[in-house]
Length: 98
Image 1 (cartoon, rainbow, N blue to C red):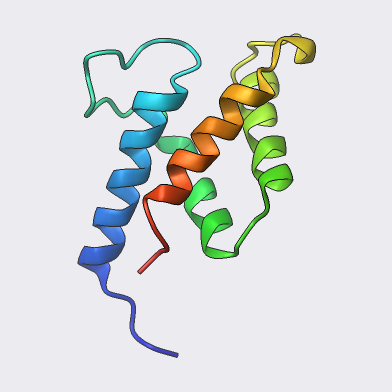
Image 2 (cartoon, rainbow, N blue to C red; image 1 turned 180 degrees about the vertical axis):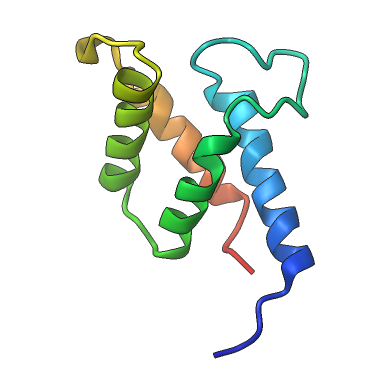
């Protein structure tokens, strides 16, 4: 198993964080503050899912859980699947994990 490049991994996770702050931001707290750490608790899970080649449906389920259950932004029928698919596409554009 090849060694993990810690610097490259941190940079990749930083780019994921930027996408979450810019494109996801379900509670509207990071507008204009790209370095905000509001969603850091989700970056690790999302990074792991992307490393494991999670499909869109699996990622959608995670974002649904984060918004509806963890953040209490429900009800579930207000979950915007189309918007989250855009977030997932932006996360995938960051590129593969190092």
